[in-house]
Length: 232
Image (cartoon, rainbow, N blue to C red; front, side, top):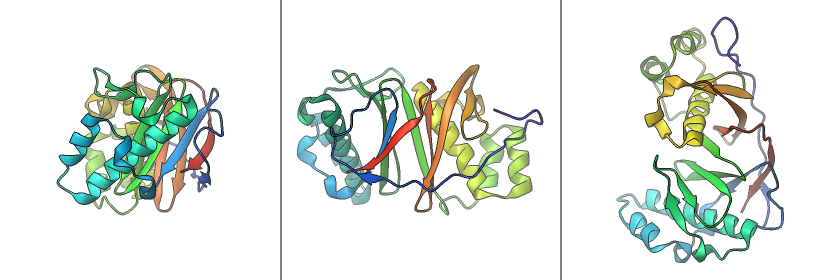
């Protein structure tokens, strides 16, 4: 929650360990699972025709590889949760542009920073975002353009890149949760501490995490904790 001073109060984020797991061996239940997807699970044969066409439109080989590993890993994991063969999962897109599987009954959200890909899964809507340290040199300048004045004031005072990344990933995760993405407006997404924030008038549950010079946030409208951190 935003303190009475209006300045965000951001705590430390513990280093996250992703445990090696096989999709389907751990039921999803009512919480949130976060998976890290590595490039070696990439399988273009699992993608739909439209996904393969989308992959071919990437000019960068790295971006194409990240897309294929993310989408094929996503299909492997949802298949494990549901028992539906990966190729039979029907990908659709909501009006705001957020993808979902129409026949799975599981919500997901995907994020990547360079080649690093993570995905969050839940029975209800979920959002996730990760960013890496060192990619944004003028983070105070970006904050001045997009953040609330109280958030900017705190960053100007501290010059703390970690604080900026916590705010940025919190905002993006909340906007991806809503399905609006950045078009929803960064000013309307207000992370407080690492456990809660506000999206307009709605309270959002937040879970901050970090690993290997990455910092991220998971967002949910429900008070669901992240109950598992896994890797393919």
